Image 1 (cartoon, rainbow, N blue to C red):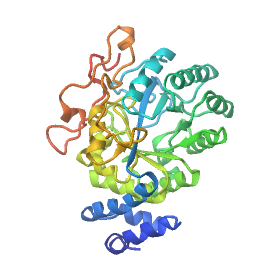
Image 2 (image 1 turned 45 degrees about the horizontal axis):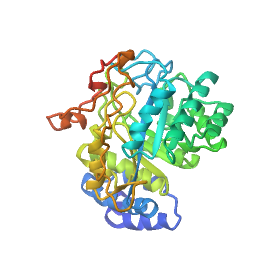
Image 3 (image 1 turned 180 degrees about the vertical axis):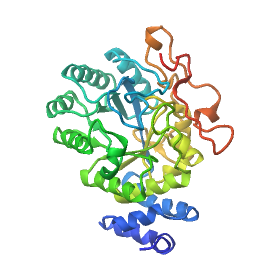
Image 4 (image 1 turned 45 degrees about the vertical axis):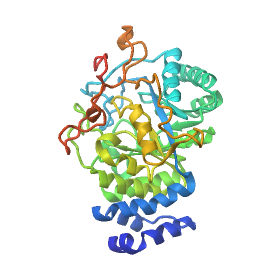
Length: 398
């Protein structure tokens, strides 16, 4: 199938076949990625049929709590927390259970139905798992009905079972890229290690959450390879991250994505995984830019506010974007819109609770500079990477 055949005459037919049980082929996936810019919005509209069939007009809102920041012994080239990173990020050891629960509550009050508890590092010790199980029980006890996803790195079977027993609904461990690309981005663990962790989470009864980072120099063939591996793993949630090229990391200065390219990647993932949660994740503000709401035509999930070591769009702007695009936040009443009850009192998680290094300072919401907060500069076409701590009272390396 050529690109012209796919986009001009057969995109609707391809979606129809997928609705009838057809599995996207490699040739079809490559054709989607190679579609011309002028045809991309048509492709999005067709892929959006699958999104609406399985998820209606809802958007699942997720919220990250960064339990431990930086100080990681792994050498993943994309990561600001990697071994040897010079990236100017907040670095701190474990939050207390009380601090983690407080941060989770902010996200839930902002509209999140899933809280993601994330810690840097290769993988947890027994003590770390005990610490996180206490957090899970506290978060779920204070927020009935909320889902909790743990993300602690490579895990052993006994750790997965303990997290599940404590109430963890899901476990996140991204494949990040294709197996054929993996040695280019990490040498301290293997692609097989990542697959084993996803399988361990599934065996323990947790929902597998595993996705991609795009824009790291991978080929179209490797993008398809990675997406099909996630399909084969039967990941329930597929976060699609767009590389944030932090200064001080090996991928500093890597800018390979355009908004339309991002939409084609998301469309390919939706066609490959038609009934799975597809999440627009880190880097969406700087790479999708003004097309973030268009991305919700194929993706049905996003993170609210900030990421692990960088600032996202203001939470209120996220909720307004969802409502303005005609979607509603999953879990809210049918009769309300996403923007009807903005998260009053919600401050983006820009620093650890209690302020930097226990200084007593409180986290502050982003200021009125909405252009910078959205990850774009005053000069269109020049993305801005806002590290966490910028726009708050916290020092970047508190």
